[in-house]
Image (tube, rainbow, N blue to C red):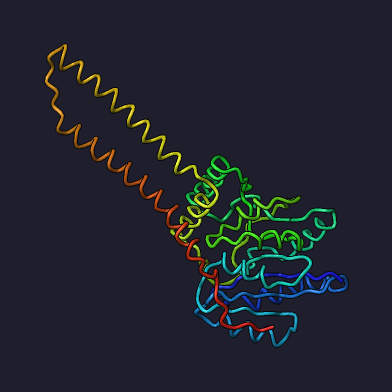
Length: 310
């Protein structure tokens, strides 16, 4: 029988893990165990609550559960990568523990794989339940990604997906330290089927994402898969230089031929501050790329495992 690996990154999820385990068994595993064997690979991303304790209790009730526990919090990207490196299934699913990813979609994913697709992934039908500002910024991010990068990240695409072993191996070939998985999933290609899913509330606990975290995530995505910010800096520099030359010619002509006195304290200060701001923004953008190069050159591990329970 083929084996399915279900990778579940966990960070402070003690309130929802028992519900998740119950739901995944009732909805998925009880329906596939005649045709597939499985493993539930939980990656404890340095949780500060009782997540690891709860996982060990669940392990005592199901020998198919495996646990990887990090030495500290390395982030969801590292947790997903660790899951992909350590899973053993012919098919691999990545999903969250908070039940915002509907477990029953795994059955639809299996149908998609049987149709010949290499990847079956979920996309949101809508953003019901999100604030208007967050929804607007999210749509803006995907438009920016689509317009500035050769890698197409589908609007509303989620990390929740099923992949064949060939796809997993291809993803593991990409060794970069700074990881943006949505972009990586698209970059490797293969035949992808998209299935729509509704937004769901967390079953328990609180979301770990805030506005600053989402902003950082969006920035990582844009810088990891696009050089457009650097090109924008060049374009702004050229525009400002052109405007400065034109204004210089106008002022010179007015002074030389019309004898106009050119007062300029206020305009000079505004111009200096504006150009200085553009320069600082450009330097900041360049610094982000240099910082990424710096982290890649150091070649530090993406995560450190403190405990592994198989």
